[in-house]
Image (cartoon, protein in one colour):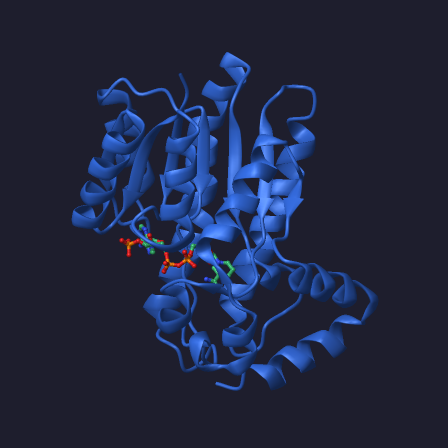
Length: 256
Ligand SMILES: NC(=O)c1ccc[n+]([C@@H]2O[C@H](COP(=O)([O-])OP(=O)(O)OC[C@H]3O[C@@H](n4cnc5c(N)ncnc54)[C@H](OP(=O)(O)O)[C@@H]3O)[C@@H](O)[C@H]2O)c1
């Protein structure tokens, strides 16, 4: 019996990943701010799959959130085999005009909490010789993103960090995988402001399909999972273009 901790499990891709891990027979620990939604999901997963589901409500933008979360994990004597760092959000707008707090919170959730939680839980995985990390990045990682600069930068971090970690873990049996989705039908579109763009709406995949690609990729210890041929084509094309050209293109596409 293994246990997967999924951050951002209250909606979207994280909820679908929780469903997949529970469906695969793992116990799950569900983390996000929306405790009611997590409790509802936990009840459903327990009934559907006869697994144990634990809810820990946490605001990962707070500096002490990860340490408090780890205290809760210890108090409940939980051993985490798989960590899914999925919680994250974006905000469309010019850096100098968007709220400083919102952008700092974005770095806290998308980067700092992901890093600290990985650091806290990874030694236990290494000691037991099993498990791994599934980090949710984005195709945004592959180029700079004017009018959403902080979000793109956080996802570039997730990609680089996970790839580096993967090499460090080589030979340990511990998986390290990045799921890099493109536009996906979740609350992210409306929350970030990206949902208004045709290029986002027309290319959006279902959260279910994205999560399935990530889950399968993680189980196969794939390094990077980019769901959908359009997203893979985009990332490949970006690799052939100079960075000044891709950032100009993105800046034009997502005018704030
Ligand atoms: N949808 C897309 O187009 C897309 C594309 C590429 C990458 N992604 C990435 O996919 C991941 C999941 O997003 P999604 O698309 O599934 O959007 P979503 O439906 O809005 O889900 C975001 C999740 O993150 C949680 N979260 C946000 N802020 C949090 C905080 N301060 N503390 C704890 N949890 C927090 C939310 O829970 P609460 O609100 O309950 O706290 C929610 O469960 C994110 O990392 C996102 O960057 C999404």
